[in-house]
Amino acid sequence: MGNDPEKGAGWDSETWGTHPVMERDRLKRGNYLRCFCPHCEAKLNEGDGAVFEVETAAGKTGLVRVTAYLDVFEHHTDLDLEEGEELRDARCPHCHHTLILPEERCPEDGARIGRFHVAVGQTLVDMRACVHRGCQWYDLDADDEQLLMLEGSHEW
Image (cartoon, rainbow, N blue to C red; front, side):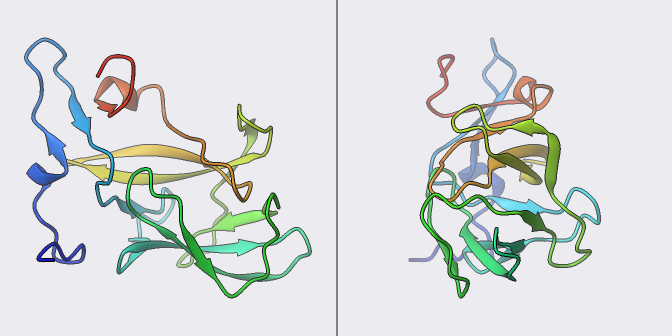
């Protein structure tokens, strides 16, 4: 209703200004996330989702559209993904470079982690997320946590 994510509602509706003590922006739940490839910097958003090229454990490839709202964990795909399946790979649909971080694992279930950029204000921050279907773990790069704080953090 009047909040078309493609047109944007302005960055002020997505972040609250810096707190004089903390000097960090606060990212609210439900915000529309503008996502970008960390390699070619192409926009990953289409409509209300971020699109990724994925490869299943069985070697089938296709596109997955993940809802691009913070803390909304929905996805759509034509691929037959089993509950609990870990993707073999997740890539940028533009440059086809892998987004998987080979040396990092999800602290929740030990699965691989993918990385992409999210625009917050005028800054791009690294966001990491588990590629195990059903896992809702995500995190910010430690350096980026100095720039903003997610709603629900112990500092909020």
